[in-house]
Image (cartoon, rainbow, N blue to C red; front, side, top):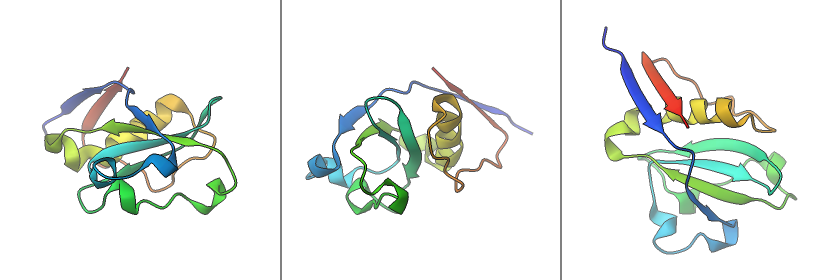
Length: 112
């Protein structure tokens, strides 16, 4: 059994949904943190199969004013993106939990 240790900082670029255009819209392998100025609302991920431009936020976020914080994940860690997103969610304790985030791998993620 091989254990893997990954270290990440929760620091990314911030965008309003209306600013997602051009080069930003084509980004893949990111953890998307939906935030207001007061707190984090929701944590989600975008893997290799999609991009930020095609992302639709959950229905329960409609009517709220929020922005995205986009944390880029290196290509070599793309297979662990769910685990990374889950650990970021645990660290931020958002208002709404994402039930699709789960980690079955033997991996340790350290979030600063």
